[in-house]
Amino acid sequence: MIVRETESADVDAIEAVARASWETDYPAILSRETAREGVEEWYAADRLAAEIESDDALVPVADGEDGVVGFAHAVAEEASGTILRLYVAPEHRREGVGGDLLDHTREALGERGAERVRAMVLAENEPGNEFYRRHGFELAEESETVIADTPYRENVYVSER
Figure: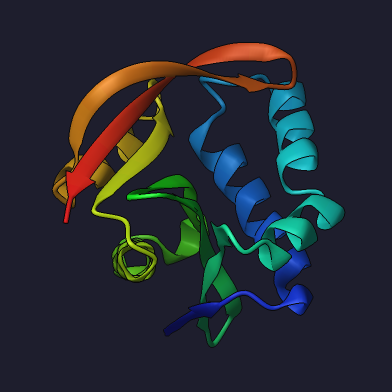
């Protein structure tokens, strides 16, 4: 398994990882329709391609024998960075893929000058919340995100470098 920067050819694989993750993680949080609309909005090919090309965004992927099995999406902002999303295909969880992606993303944000890294996760996504706590992030605040025109509570975790 290697973690590398995304290439334009990875767009479909990223969308597939996101779809499988949302279907696995969010059935008790989001309706099936909301999850479908959210994936279509957030991971549309043209939107992903723009993020990959953006100077401010980082979109590393975990690439293994099965192809892309995970990805992160982060943005660098002055002296901080924000991990907006980090997903691992359900069949590849508990293999260290998420930790490798997180380490890579934190290091890349640090190289861009981030002294503080924030991570966003839906408040009701307990496995996601536990992941960040296990990796040394502390809950800092609660915010709101909108998925398919519906607001959801989101936890904001912080880790200092």
